Amino acid sequence: MKHIALARAATWVLVASLAACASAPNYQPPQLDLKDDAWRDNPWQPAAPADEQPHGAWWQTFGDAELDALQVQLEQGSPDLAVALARFDQATAYMQAARAALLPSLDSAASVTGNRQSKNRPLRGSNQPDVYGANTIGISMSYELDLWGRVRSLVASGEALAQASAADLQAVRLSLHAQLTESYVSLRGVDTELLLLRETVLTYERALQLTRNRHGAGISSGLDVARAQTQLSSAQALVSELEVHRAQLEHAIASLLGEPAQSFQLAVRAADLKAPELPVGQPSTLLQRRPDVAAAERRVASANAAIGVARAAFFPTFTFGPSYGFQNTGGENWISAPNRYWSIGPAVNFNLFDAGLRKSQLAQARAAWDEAGARYRSVVMNAFQQVEDEMARLSLYKVEIEQQTQAETAAHQALQLAMSRYRDGAIDYLEVVSAQTTDLQIRRAMLNLQNQRLLSSVRLVRALGGGWDKNSLALPSPTSVRGG
Image 1 (cartoon, rainbow, N blue to C red):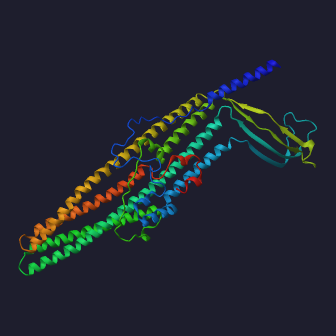
Image 2: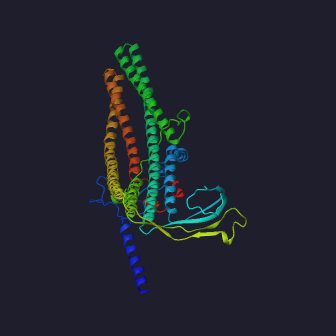
Image 3: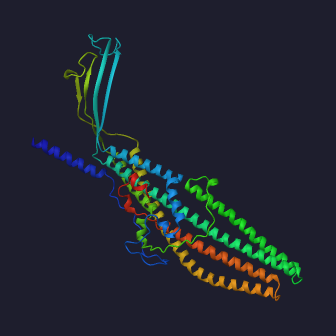
């Protein structure tokens, strides 16, 4: 008995040792060399722990109720968001299917058949009938003894993929909200420019009438009238060009919302959008605040677990499958003690030769892990670049707007002087045309700069991850990710 106990103990030690060899490698996220933990072009203050990013409906910082309403409509009607939700549902179902393998599978079966056996069946007894019935009812259980961690690795891989899909969904949601905000900001920028050009058209119409009156009085030449008409027609052409651009932006917003372009319309108006002042925190926090970074990291974890699945294939598969039921040849008292049958005991399956298949599958799993790690580092580097790009733009836009403001003031004064001197007959209309052109160009450039600053703010919010945080991936479920 003592020798039997020692043999059993040695067997379990061997099994435990083999199981340790077969499990997935200890997971460590890919390491990144963040040498300088500060943003080079940060134009704002460092973030405090409680305010390092806008939360939830970050677009509300722009202060436009119509934009807020459109964002709500986006959540309800966007076809692109519906696609992302369906992908997340698929990943969740895969995860749940993998988890099911951790528990035994219980099946039941019943059959009532009539049968005829051949008279010349090998090993047939002389007293066996030619025709007989067979009634069977029973239950059976199947369970894989996960000694090598194959099932646990499958579950870990499925859970990591579900978390990656949850992060993908949030990345799509962030992208759609940012696209809608950018399109809306661009549209309102076009509206502001349209209002400027329509006001300019009215001014040029008055200037044209002035030159016609002076020409009729013999004070100015027909060349002045032609020049004034040219300015007016050019401004009118710019209005038509902007109206085409505005229609395209309006159609883009309709597409994002899942609305037919022909029935969607936003009234032209000047919007006083506010550029948010964003505390951006430190670069290391970006790894927690970008859903695409989180998705890439979770795919590395899934690939790591897949190595454990490939390793487990080198070891025997142990299953336990008891069964119990009743069976007879079609007579009465089918379900009774004499008709019972049962089976119990473990089974083992081990491949002796596969021509290198399992080695190739393990090499493939390791290569997939290398690929996922490289992709993760690429996503992170791209995230850092996007943040630095937008902060650099915002910093330079601030300086450029200050300079453009001075140019706008000077151009407006030059135009007023030119018109005054033209009325006094001191100059011809060519100088007025030059002053008008310069003034309009600088005013449009100022509006474009202000709009670009707003757009860059949107892109910075997007680059920082919006209001998302990696902690939301702790328990991926449909209810935790659908609401945004």
